[in-house]
Length: 162
Image (cartoon, helix red, strand yellow):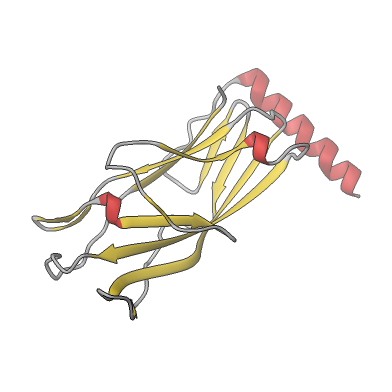
C-alpha cells in the first residue's frame, strides 16, 4: 500500500512539473511546479499573556506548535521562506522583530524586520524524503511600550527551488 501511495505521489508531482504552476496563493495550500506547500491553518492566535520572572520580567503571548507546514516534493533542493508585516491595531504598531519563532525542539529566534525573508527550512535538512513536516511555535515579546489593542499581522510562507 505504501508503494502505491509513493508511486501516485511521484506521478502527481511529475504532472505538476510538466504543466507549470497552478495559481493557488494566499491560502492554506500552494501548488508549485516542483511540489506542494500546505499550512495547517490560515490563522494563528497567540493565546493569553504569560510572564517569566526574570529581571526585568519577560512578558509575551505564545502559541506553541501553532502551525504545521507540510511539504511534498521530489526535488531535494528547496527552501522554505517566511516573512511578515508589523503588527497593527488602528494607528498603533508593534515591530515584527518582537515576534519570535522556533521549530519543534529548537530555540526561539527573532524575526527579521517587516518585508525581509528568512529561510526557515531547507531540503538538505531532510535528505531522502518526499514529505516534510515542520512544526512552528510563535511568541510575541512585549517591551512595555505597546498601546492596548487587538493586533494582527500577515505572515507569508513561500517555497523556492534555487
